[in-house]
Image (cartoon, rainbow, N blue to C red; front, side, top):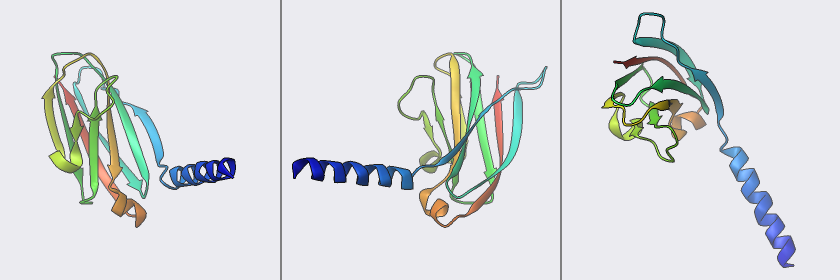
Length: 132
């Protein structure tokens, strides 16, 4: 009986995980020659999100701004190798500026909050990334 209960719990956990899975697209950010920034214009809908990866060196200043018409559209920034986000847009806003603590690929994850994602909302946004 214990084996059956364990199997049922494992299946339920797997189904719940699948229900909350996101449609994540990954992009590498490249600046045009002679520039130190770019603006990306995109649209996400529902549970879609985009993870932008930008190579940055320690000591540089990184500025990220999200312009959007959807109040549930945010971004997080995660440092290379970090388990938690360095910047959390839903609590800190849609503008980030900081001195980069370590060299590597910083991930900027653009997403809709769960309430908007469940309603299938769409967010058109402009993400400006500048490194100096």
